Image (cartoon, rainbow, N blue to C red; front, side):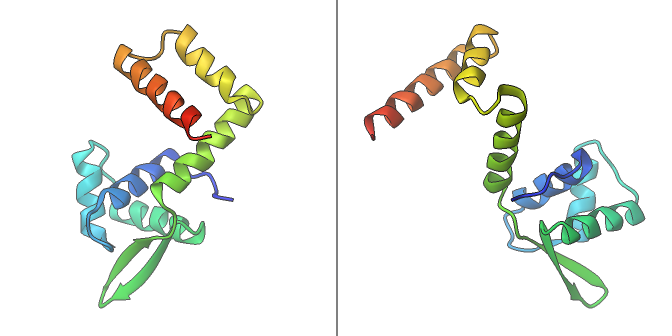
Length: 127
């Protein structure tokens, strides 16, 4: 099971997941946080990256004086785990209740509703 991570750790992971390179260097993460309006002190980022390594989200490889970080958990894998957790916690595991709430609560834009309807129809036809 994929562990839950803090909001700040998630911001870091989003930067790393968004990197087109296989490995991510420390300056790339620092710049990414600054670009998102969430600058971070060097020591704080080191602690957060160490936590992500300890939680099994990243591997770190020392190259000279710098660490190179590689993801061990895919973004979709984390999203799926968190969605299941949310679904179980809030809707007692009922996806129908979640979708009903999105529709009845007017939480979907028209185009999102259409996309969701098409996905449901497509999934229904594959059975």
